Image (tube, rainbow, N blue to C red):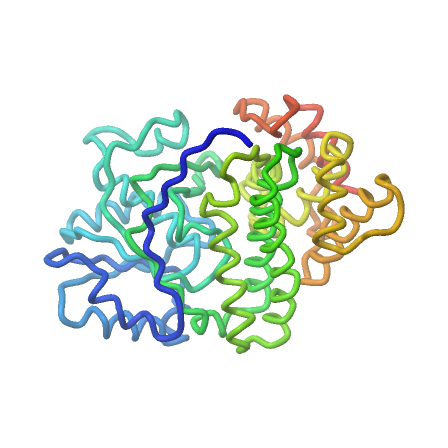
Length: 386
């Protein structure tokens, strides 16, 4: 097991009716700015619950944050928050709303005359950020318990990420009943996103970390059980609760302690979203199986373990089990209604070269063992095109 430091200060408030606890969680004396997306929180009653909880304190609101949050929207939000004198940000919605709110939090305290987009390009340390919390209504990204955020810039068609402990939420309210009204596509997307987050920290190579392996496998198996049930029974509280908690634990850092990680699927998927506006999770359903195929030999040990422990594949030799691991993963994504090839989404073949060019120009490191280059990205996407 590798050396590691783990610290997570996020307070999780989980369960039905927990939005009512907002008054006890918010700092006294600060004006709150509520951020949200396209208005679903008004239709499902979450907005009314938040408004009732904030009734005795000053607050303002800013809606319209996109599913792939835009830098341009965030910059306008920074100006609005400063004008309103907001001292605390409350994201109400899914991971996109929370990611945007993290960027807004940085922008509000970024040095005058400088563009906060710098943190996406240079990996500069974030010196300060406005404190924030969240009410999570779409489990997927794990952003409610980490310092990560992904932002898209329209002008350059870039989708990049930053991470900083300064933007970890002070608290996150997770009420599974707020997810009952999610459309099937969003429910499925959340399950896929969480599943791939786990796989990218698990499907690497053995480092004698059996606890982390089994924690990861527990999340994966739970998602394979609870995900389809949440789709079939949208108001099944138990299924929704298990999906929500899995999504949080998939990327709160715990299963990544002391083990290598390979975020190639996400890096490639971000480019597909930036270029073609395809749902983030759908890009992952394309890229993860292709990465598994391309790196089959390097990852064979973990592929075999994954096949046995997550999918109960015990027949055949290692070669057969490795093949079964990929096939079962693709079948699971398809059972949730997600395609696993470029053709499933009518993405052009030219996407292969475009994505390879963009990642090469950006110089991003892919994979945990091998220095994957342009030819590897092309090969991965070629497999995804079949």
